[in-house]
Each structure stands twice: as structure tokens, then as C-alpha cells.
Length: 233
Image (tube, rainbow, N blue to C red; front, side):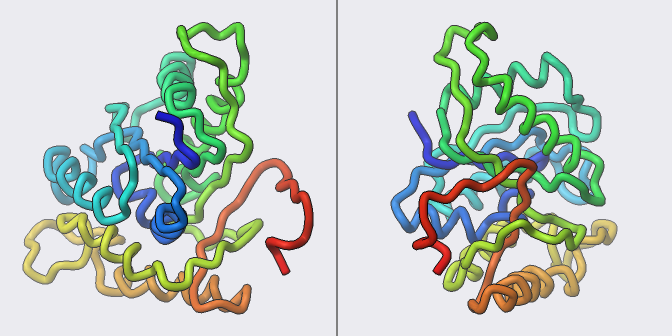
């Protein structure tokens, strides 16, 4: 299956938090979108790998993505090495996305920056014909890094007005991870009511910067090429 957009996250819920409204908007526009989770989030303070698996499936259904896979890398300990790169190369060649979304280049959780680097380098390697996987070589046209915990300055902001509620629904499908006054597990930085509210507040703040109701910010290491100015007027 060829996808228009393939979104990678180091953990289940990364894509929802960083780019959930973007994914929902692209699906609504008729684009085929997939999500790849690198790990099962098994080291998370709250919940288990099993609960995260069900939550990820529920979130994928809410967003309407065409496919979601988990590569089963070790949470906290995966590396940017040949073995892990080859797994991602196989996934990129399998789905041949035009655009790849992935973790923030710098963030509070060590897996986020590490995952960003791993996916970015794998996208380049995937385009080299002499790396043999039994698949056609493929390199995505663009790689965009969504913003997560740190309020990094985006290189561009996508208007996601009308899709924040779906993003929130997908995020809160992870019932073990986010605010629930009845949950007796230890508190975490993302389980507070303040963080729950920040999901919508950040979208409003980014939207304000571009004169819309809501936005999601992205960074890129290279340059974004435009054929004309129509899309930004």
C-alpha cells in the first residue's frame, strides 16, 4: 500500500500529541496516512505495553489512518544504528510516502530526539539503491519534525482549525496516560490537568501566529521548496 504521509513516533501517543490535528486534516482531505510507533512505550510510568497497544488502535481509528504498525524497538534503549535503520528503511520502502512526519529534533524525552535522527537518516538511506532489501529504493520528498514538549520555534505552522477536537479525542484515547482523577498510578508530567489543557492552548497559540483558530508547528533540517506562492497567500 502506497501512502501519502507516514508519521513516526518513538512512542504510542507521540504522533497524536505532536501532529494529531494534521493527520486528521490530511485524512479528511483524502490523503492516505499511516502511523509507525518505534516502541511499545513499555517503560512508561503509567499503563503497560498491552494497554498502550489497545489505546493506539483506538486512537488510530479516531484519526482514520489507513495503517498503524509497531516496530517493537526497546523503549529508552533503541539506537540509531544499522540494525534499526534497516527496519525503518524496509517500512519506508513498503509504504513509499511522499511526506514523513517524525519526532522533535530536541525534546525532554531522550527517545524523541534520538527517534528524529534515526528516522531522518533512514529516509536518506532508503533512497540508496545499493542498500538491498528486496524492495524498490524510495526517498520521501519531505521530512517534517513535529514539536512536542519543548516550545521550539517552528519553521512553518499548518492551519488545523476545526481538527483540534479530533486531535484531543485521539490523545485522550490513551486513558492510562492523561489526566484522570480516579487513576491511582503515579503522576507524570503529562497526566496533569494543566497538560491536558495545554494541548488546546498550544494549538490556539500557534494558530494565532498565522491568523487562524489553531495550528501545529513543524521543523525541518533542509529547505521547503515551493512551486508558487498560491498555497501561502
